[in-house]
Length: 194
Ligand code: FES
Image (cartoon, rainbow, N blue to C red; front, top):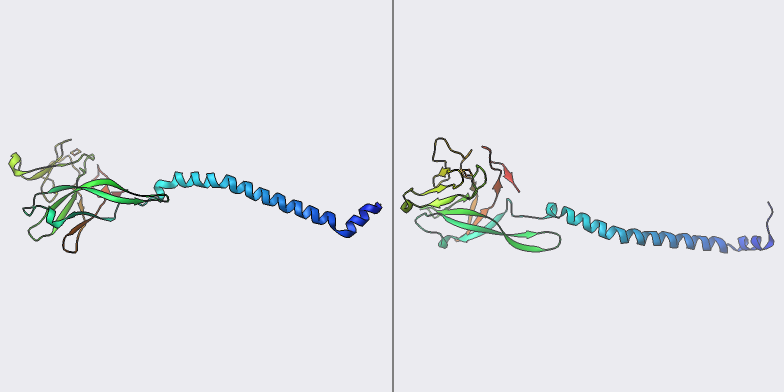
């Protein structure tokens, strides 16, 4: 194969190979930078899209809801908002996540019930004895009634199950903590959601 003198000299010195390698490395580096520039917003968008999945909510977590001293000693139920900390990849926020009824017993224990009616998700109300209805929980949507332990009062009730009880812990003798949980409504089974 014929070869010009200058070309032979250049090949002998290895200079064009070094140049080609440098050019190749530069192109690879540029491609890497371009890919990284595209990847950042794509990954960010993907994380934002998945944010609710990554978020740690209040479901199933113990949340401090009240002080034992703040609950009536006569056992009158108190409706208490549940405010919980939510943590996701970007921030830590405190927000209301629901409510519970708390009732202090004669033994200084606390019973907690979800305020959500198991029939269709309305919020049940407490009606005290002075209202002429006796102490009970009452759902204004379809008139289901529950006793103070959350049991259905009517033989035929719109509600497919009793009110949902929640685990309670008393810490340091006075702090009332509840394992907050929501449940599927419209079913006789107690199925946790969220
Ligand atoms: S939602 Fe409570 S009885 Fe229907």
